[in-house]
Length: 161
Length: 252
Ligand SMILES: [Zn+2]
Image (cartoon, rainbow over the protein chains, first blue to last red):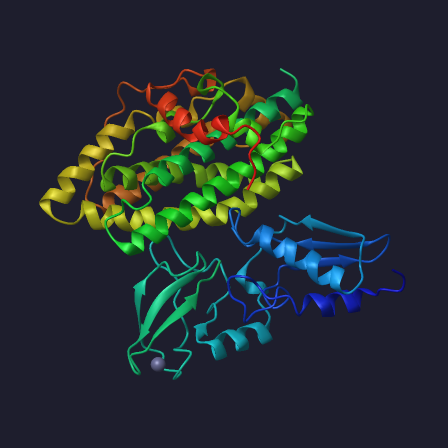
């Protein structure tokens, strides 16, 4: 296939959902690190965690999405460095998380101490800032379970990493 | 010892310690005292097994003989493993697991931080990725250590016992050999002599918060760098490798 541009590939990748949080695309999540279209299509992906069980599923869905667009020569490369951080989740991604009911990571990483975890800025449903942590570990490694002290609804918080 | 051999040996030690630590956590799946800990433990195990895969994949490339992650994990005998002794100790009770993680991860964070700045790019990248995970684990272990140590009389008594039980395996962290020397001198890797006081400081701080005292240094047990393990490793490796050896070459 000739004439594929980097922008086109990036647009296609923006439609590939993250398997664990399908409201986010892999570009919203910030794991698409680079795209090259010289001599086949090469996509550099950053794994979110060393043992992220979704890594292989994401690679397979990238290949599937590009094949559907007629790209045959595809290479996926894992980019460990610099390590992925929740700081790379885009503004659109954060807005989409809130709409979906997940509080986005609240601060730049590296600011919390040995004993204190970061916490959500506000309840994604009503916007109240008083919240209580129910469990530091939620349905996926990256999320914690919280309850809003105001509307009392449970919600998930995407932890800073 | 030439530098490539030393690097390979070092990366395999890291892989073995990560895998054996992950395997001990896997043994605890469904055995945690509450659901939150169930999720934490399973997630931490995933981090360790994921790190082991990265180390083993790199080791295979350094070795250049076509071995991959599964070959290192499942097709070596326990005598070939070079994981730290503390990793292979049986799980015991919940407080034992917390104390072991606290002692080891206080060291592992420092080791990975040093490696993230080392001259071997690939190892530095793996370490930079991994240290973010282990810092998080260490926070969890420290929180629990404080809850148990500064908890009831019974919980204090039990974690004080855990501390006595695992302390003897910590001297080994700093008992370097020629592989560690090459890593430090040729690759700018961790300088164990300078890590030790920092480790002691971290550990003393956590123990103080948990109302526990730092144990005496006596009867240190070492030897994993030479393949001298405690009796527990053989059973762990046999169980871990059973499925792969029963179905050679099986794939998901
Ligand atoms: Zn609310």
